[in-house]
Image 1 (tube, rainbow, N blue to C red):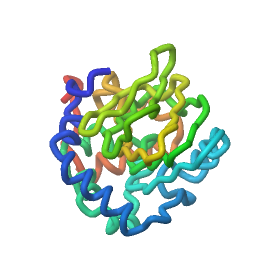
Image 2 (image 1 turned 90 degrees about the vertical axis):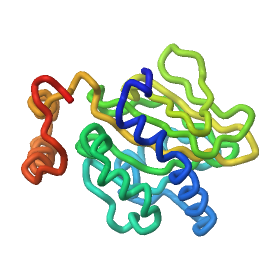
Image 3 (image 1 turned 45 degrees about the vertical axis):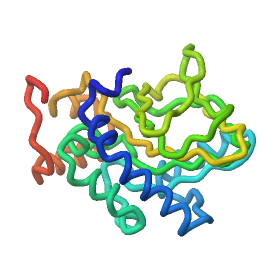
Amino acid sequence: HNPHQHAACRALLAAYPQIRQEAISLLKVDRRVKSESGCGSGEGFASYLSACLTAGDWADVGLYYNARRNASNAPRAPFTSELLRSSHELRTSATSCPFGSAYFSLLRPGTRLSAHCGPTNGRLRAHLGLVVPRGDCCIRCGDEPPRQWVEGEVLLFDDSFEHEVWNLTEHPRVVLIVDLWHPQLDTDTKRLKALQVDGDREVYKGIIHRQEYQITTERGH
């Protein structure tokens, strides 16, 4: 997937310097950043990823989970949290997604997460490279060859396909992960049909009712 074709990815790229600096400052202030229940990927998925861990350690700082803002973590990353909340492009295409998340992801040296799959093909996952060490630090998705993250670039993929990540260097890797609505779900009607859980539909209806972004039309946006 070409991230430059997605307005939300372009918004992330435009804010890359500020996001990167905030991530670095966050990690310097809290060197004991760790994965906490419901912090980033959600309690259930965090446990799932822990089961995929074959070596090393990973951590996250969650800003959004299932279209809900993490108010307790917002002060830790005020610029990025506010960007996700207020940017029209990100609110429309990313943080309004009830089966999506947004979080800083730290992959510590010597870490490998074995092959796993996301829960739905109704989204795409964006990785904004923030701190990427040289060497064997890659992601493999589906049958594609492994790819390395690049600082200041977005790697966009469908995480419903089997994928694995590893950092076999001596330095940490940090990315901002943001889930986007699949581009084929470009209207509210299509999105509501794609939401199979009643609670998710109610969350999205609430977003529409509060007019937290310009409501999409059948012509898309």
